[in-house]
Image (cartoon, rainbow, N blue to C red):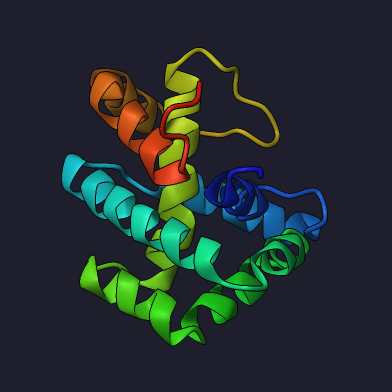
Length: 153
């Protein structure tokens, strides 16, 4: 079974199915989001809980497929209209928008910090790449664990 959170995160980034304005807006939100260790901790804790929650849903495969074609506004509405998802975010002092922008921001900063080149689909601000490089050994295993990648490389 593919990793649920990885698929969800991919769908929440710069997908080709989005209108160019939506992709440009999401790209700018990711570039503007400033990572800090407290924020990374919040995001990773929420992501771990969200992965477990989404994986427990009987229609999780359909949800993932559908989210891949949604605009950022539709994704935001989907999360905001899900009481359990919002409870997870509230418990971690995050808004739906902070989560939907923050997780891809952290993921892409870690990817670039590991040497993956930036592209149309992978963007990270210089400050976030510097942050990710400084904390890579701590954050990468936690991201993998939150993704459900425990025990696989």
